[in-house]
Amino acid sequence: MAIKKILCACGSGLGSSMIVHMNTEEILKKIGHPEVQVEHSTISDINPEAADLFVVGGDLADFVSNVPDEKKIILKNILDKNELEEKLKAHLG
Image (cartoon, rainbow, N blue to C red; front, side, top):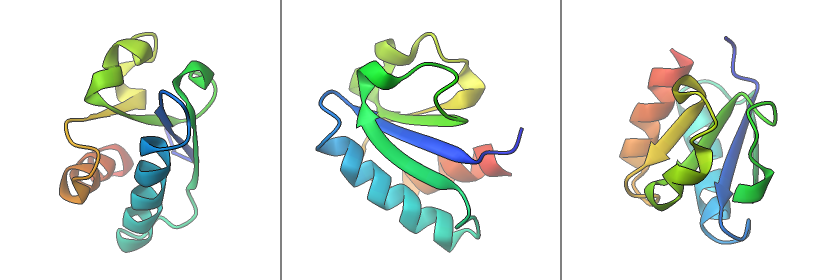
């Protein structure tokens, strides 16, 4: 499945999701996928049809349990760009 849209989410949709959003865009450009659309929102906006891939912190993993594993990235450390890059590469091929 081609990934066209990534949704980064946190509890309020303002703080950590914005940080992950900016890091995701930076990494997508670095690895050659600037065409992928990135958005951030609150965890309550997550449903499997809202995006092709979801990125959340480990503290919110329970909130995305309804999303198939192949459509989500759970970060141990939302500030770790190396972890994010490794996991994005695994999903983007």
